[in-house]
Amino acid sequence: MIDVNSLRLGNGLQLLHHHDPSTQMVAVNILYDVGSRDERHGRTGMAHLFEHLMFGGTARIPNFDIPLQEAGGESNAWTTCDLTNFYEILPAQNIETAFWLESDRMASMTFSQQALDVQKGVVIEEFKQRCVNRPYGDVDHLLRSTTFTTHPYRWPTIGERFEDIENVTLDEVEAFFRAHYTPGNAILCVTGNIDFDRAVELVEKWFGEIPARSAKARNIPAEPLQSAPRMATVRRAVPQNMIIKAYHTCGRNDAGFPVCDIISDLLANGNSARFFRNILMETDLFSDLDAAVWGSIDPGLLVIKGKLTHGANIDKAIELIDAETAKLADGDVSQYEIEKYVNKLESKECFENISYAEKASKLCYRQLVSGDADDINREINEYRKITTCQVASEAAKLFDAANETTLLYGPDV
Image (cartoon, rainbow, N blue to C red; front, side):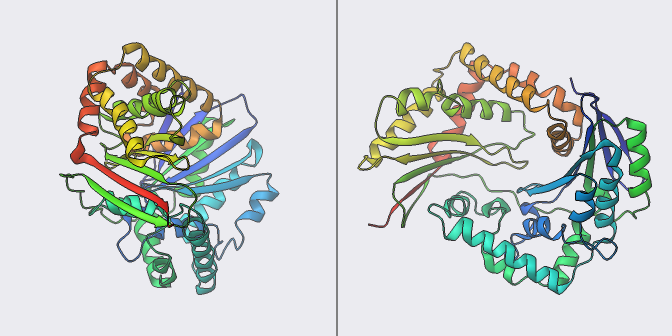
């Protein structure tokens, strides 16, 4: 059980707090409700660019890292299609440094052409290393652009093209900051060896005077229902054939999401999962085969990826995958098998939640997704309710041929 305290400041900033006296450290996690789904075509990769820009310092604090390191702390960040997350970890006695730094860049982030050019170069180089100059690096781009036609999930967080970042102007950067990096668009969680009164005192001192600003209203187009199977074939300079099959799922906060999550586990979570037992162990067609559900806030995907061994028959490999998904749709699953993966999930969550820093990011995420961080304590109960009939029903919808996209990615010779 994770005890959660909360407070909303007058400017809209949401504070979450969890006291963990077992450590002498404190984590400050701040989540901004902005990700790549908030971008527009032609200016993709903006949220990821901002992950970099936010460490560039301000007029009052030119170097973000130096005071943090001098206080014995560390920091990092990540961006997804739905959010941008920053965190600092410091000794409890020095935690005010984190509040000072985070409040400063929320209140007075400044951007110069020189800093923008530096970070644009960093992000563009990252794009090229990850997506252009690496085998299979453009799989995510190809999959998204084939499965999505309308919703901004059709491009990855790093951006659709590096030219989008290359052409970003300083005015566009400043407008993006004003639109999304506001107190009311942020969730701040403090976990570790700090009591609630002290957390409230610090958040009011450092964030309370930041003026409220209205975040940009969302107007994200819904993805139309896929009505026919899709297939694409791509040839690249890669060593093995790869099969990627994707199926549209519900969003993270939908009642059907836990069932979709368990379906992906039944297929590919560990050595007792169906792909491993029935395909990897029984045939020599695949060198690896996996399945995962996105868990995005808006409806996303369940994705199956498999690399084939040299000379393996692609049609036979597809048949094997389809046979396993069809079994689930036909009701070939036991309550024992479901409970096994629910237990595995609960065990994983318990071990992860030992970390005060992990709890900070998870509480922010739960607050964003459902509006109530305390849902972190109730979520496993929704998995406990899953029945064999629910799995069969959801699998039948999920693996319907009209909902399927297949990407065949292989060598160019």
